[in-house]
Image (cartoon, rainbow, N blue to C red):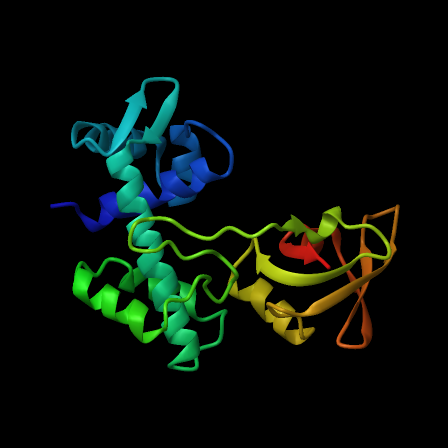
Length: 218
């Protein structure tokens, strides 16, 4: 039986590996999990013994196919619960992550299958992230960061990099949500800030904000 802690490590390795690294360093995992590197080493050795990960000393760790399947199932449950909380219980998108962190460890396959059906098989969570289906496959969309746009581009907000409550509240304050239309009006060379038009109003956003919003051009 896999433990809750093991599931959290597997999910962390999956997310870190998804960002481009074939293997993930124990230091990166320690930073993600907010723990000591020595504790991470002990855990990844255990995951390796159970067949969930491949660990090579001084090189790092990646997930086996079994480990990837477990990670995708956790991600699937997490994102389905986020949809449920927002769509059915009227939570705001900045409130659901921590709750879904708890709910994602529920083991019942029947519950998750019926939850998926009840929600009419959503493909993306409230933050724009794709939801894996029961086979682990998910629909990807073409997207770039807002920071990569040029003046004159017309685009639609399709996701966020930072799903922290503070960032999502900032977006709510300025009426930026998934599906919002954004027009790129001006780019400031000095600090890379961008002036956009959203909901008929001009807004200057920082480079940090622009690097945390996914858009697709139209």
